[in-house]
Image (cartoon, rainbow, N blue to C red):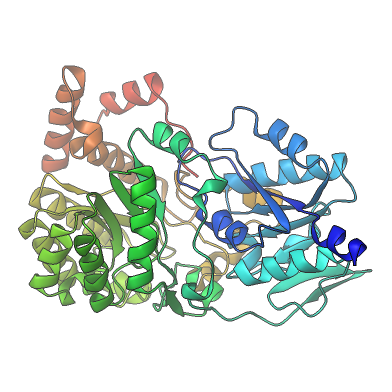
Length: 479
């Protein structure tokens, strides 16, 4: 009996790594899997390269005596950092089991195992899968039969059956004690807490990998549980802004209303922001808009993508330009800020379709000083339906995918050079014509006026301001 209790008292160290990026978003995915391990048996350490001065050194110190090293892998530059750290970990601890999850392994669970430093991949929702893996490792067993994984068995790779999405109510709440919350507040420049209340998306956008990872399914935390969790977090950390990281926060309007009621009933005093589709904004009754604003809604993020009716159908966005304009009008009516994000450079997109997008950007920007309209290039995200059209031009290896900048990189090679120059100039002046980056005194105010004049008059020749700004103040990669 004594020996049994001594074994049960052992706490196995599990080290989780969040790769480098310029954003300081809290590592909610790692928090989710770390919070669902039995704290009596597992000692979870999260190393976040976004806040560490020496992330590799922190990892190498942390893995001493560890049972497992887990890493989340997002396609693009974070993938490169993840690979570098994984390889260093395997050199230091060849015996240490490594597990990779996140978007890239979810899309390529078998191919990711071509990398020798990765032992196991997890596809899709990871809370239960990772907990089962840790239980097996702690008992000295293999992972055979665990749903949602791929692993090596001798010379072959085994992929198990997919794991279906579960309600977030089935899991433990995120334990923010696993991260230095105040450090994130400091780096963000505001007391902003990141939170996710739902997972997945019901829609079928052809440029997005979400339908392949979650099968167009969507699961959420109940409004009542969110009220309890968020009140406890607010009373502990006194954050002033809550940033919902859900794919589509406004999926069910009655749930949104219930969450707002929870905030108000509990006397919670903060602003909040969430994601919204244009068609969801149209269907949201004015009384729920007002309820959202009373509970602290300050901003929504709406993925518009295109201003072309034809492209809207081709990318299977399942919304309309009219819906976008109607939602914009509702946001203006209720004094809600909006980030309307756009994408250009789709395969076979015509110049006229690009111009329609630029035109809609100008229309929205003119509607309210609280509207931002960032413009990005289409990137063939692995697994998305539209990526098949340019499959011969997409990366083949993990290292190639790591060099792919999904946020700030250039357009695909299928975009004609003259159109690329036109878009680049528009992107620059659109950014400085409105939004937070354009405010200020002196040179900043002058740049704002020039940018607005160029955008309003479609004059982009001799872009001296663009040359000066980009050479005097180059921006880091955003991915």
